[in-house]
Length: 103
Image 1 (cartoon, rainbow, N blue to C red):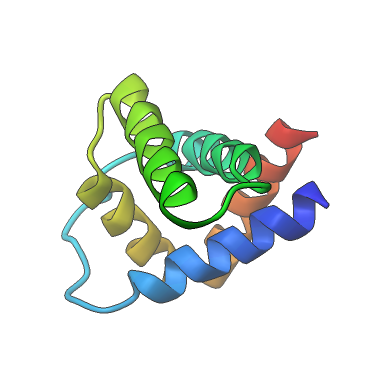
Image 2 (cartoon, helix red, strand yellow):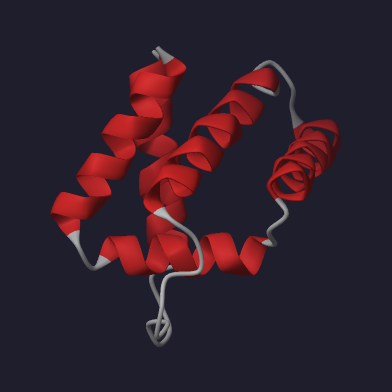
């Protein structure tokens, strides 16, 4: 279930942020992206039984906490995902790293 949730989450994130010009340099290393990806999957799992406004606001708050812990912002994470979406082997490696962190 964790793997399916992580893959679904990554697919949604990459699709949502796949528009725009690619950055000139990566905002963060792949290991950090994998760690954040794993923590965001846990945040999603924490709100699985919720619905409506409570789910949306809790998810937004948990995501912001993850970004704050890592000292980044949503835009840097989005740019990293955008860059990864253009390199499928690298994206696969990052997703495997995130999956191994969850296991």
